[in-house]
Length: 385
Image (cartoon, rainbow, N blue to C red):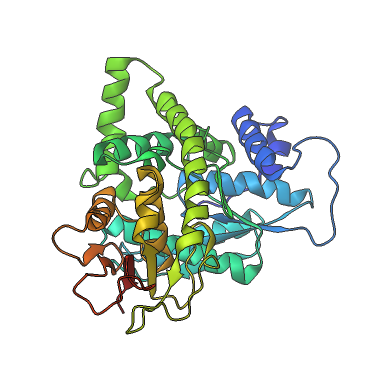
């Protein structure tokens, strides 16, 4: 790989700041609450932020832009490189990326190798789950305040179209949020060609993942065929319009998620159910907020009457929160709909298989559970081992 120079070196060499680099710095600075101009004010024990970096143009440009803020002494910047082991030579790519990041002044730079657990999902979903697991572990172990991701406006537009093609709901059509938990995405208003321009301006040597041009992947076909076609037929700016729609829907989805979290924490009974239908170790209302996994929970019961009393948008979200808390992945709307049908008490009592080894069933009237007892009228979700 080529030897990289820091953004500070580049500015001194050319005598002026590249406008695209300046634009990207402003985006990062706004999200982090840091200034890009004026006198810097170094602080004692500055907070650490990490950049999730694959070595591709988007994340490498983000890392280089963040390196500028590290030189001002108000924040420390490190990076995490995740090797998914999905291609030959991936370990070498990860190491070369780490070397380039260290050359930018990032510290610490961690390389994490992951094994994919498919659990009934495709390779892309498995890679995403493994990647975020590695990022969360690295952030926790290093005490990082935030993890920055290099997704761009083009990624957002692709996500919206993929959600439409799958017939997904509001959350999926909302795409990626600029801020969610510890994760920040400062480049969601930046185009992909601009990250390439940043890499060129700063003499970076990004890695170009060959799978990003492989038409076997649906996202690649959307990127190379569908969006250009829509642009030609509907006029320029289609990617910006899709991203704008995602932003609008994102606010709606955030509000519904907040309402669903309240209802979920109110009714969730963490099991397992005992023989008489009671919930052993009942811990309603003290679970993981917003669906964060609760360690050791293997079974969750939800009131059927409580679920029926919710608006459909909230009911589906509550079911999804239970599946995620049990360690599963976000279920599809189709699978959530099948679980929801159990509330009709017609036909089979289940189980309905959700993604991530989580199943749902209702307590049948044929079971030896008192109809007026706490174990009756429950929809139960369980993760198999």
